[in-house]
Length: 171
Image (cartoon, rainbow, N blue to C red; front, side, top):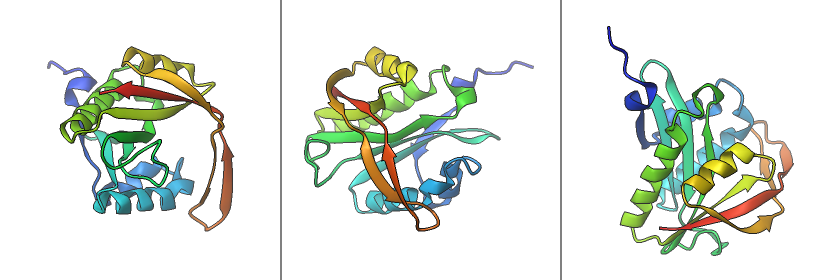
């Protein structure tokens, strides 16, 4: 029996409402439940695009969210600038090309829609992700304090401090 490499078995597609529980990754990201629901609502309004990478019998192993419209037009302006966030691949599947493939698909989709620039933040201590983004053509354009907040799944206010680098790519 010949087994195909995992990357050839991956399906990258838009998120459906039924995918929302899978984005919690078996409880690891349950605290983001409200954020995922809001991102999905924004996708229904045309303000974001949500992607998942799925493997047969294993389910969702990656996700990538794109904000296409924002009050912060330096990130996303609804016409030419888009912002990638919530981009992750489950640890056992990293280094197999899944993240790079997801990024290429999202970028091609954005380019077809007329977007010219895409940006993202990468944690200053996440060197592996930064190297992947650089291989894919992203360049650091500014530091970002990475301070943000959200309501978790229990309705508790949480503050996050993740110093990051803002990276951009021309499509």
